[in-house]
Image (cartoon, rainbow, N blue to C red):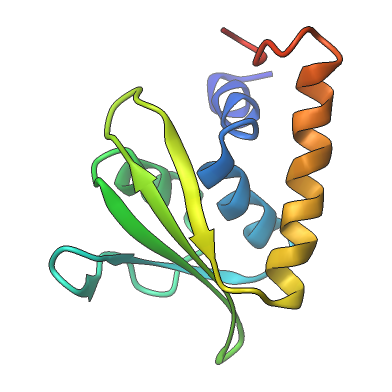
Length: 121
């Protein structure tokens, strides 16, 4: 396993980055909207590493998920920057977002099996 794979595996347990990975793995496009300046900070993208960098440098971002031209998901992410706690604070109810929520609950359950500790801590 190379360094990028290891980092991406760790990121899988972070709610915001899990959402992005999940969407990309499903073949969707993700766009990031900076709520402070009210503009997109990424074009329609499937570049995980670029989005990861942005997620760690902004305090509030909307993560928008598209299937073609149709927006199928929208999440409001509060990111403290750096290593602070990052949460998907709220999201628009849609089939995609509900599917992702169930997926992430399973990921969280995995951590519970190890005493609530996040992997790689």
